[in-house]
Image: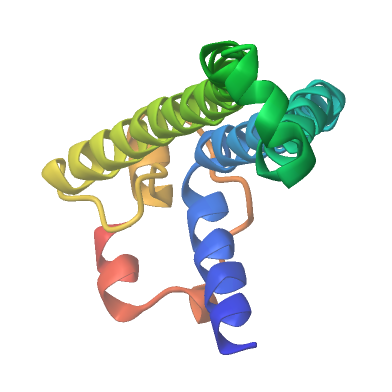
Length: 168
């Protein structure tokens, strides 16, 4: 619960300074969720193919281990044939799992790229704001008055500190 409170508080602080950072973070979350859903669907679809290869390997294992079939396997020299079929089934399963793992790798790469861009934008924005000497990257009321603009809220003497009142 304290972690969630920290995330909410951090989000409030960031959104006050730049809503773009929050929008990018939301986009990152949506892209990540969509890719995870797509991968889970792909994983479910691949289970049927893996099941076919699993049945083949189970059948071959049962036949090779059966004592009654052992004599026929030796007489007809079918060891190489059984091994070849077993290897083909394992290679088929390996190919399917490779596709699944490649999908998760691409998801991780896309997530890392989006996170890199988000962090790069965020840190660049905050460093530039601090480099200008701004505590809050938004323009201050005094800066708005110097430019000839008006502040968004009316200023009252009670809401100003002594230093701000001296500047005006």
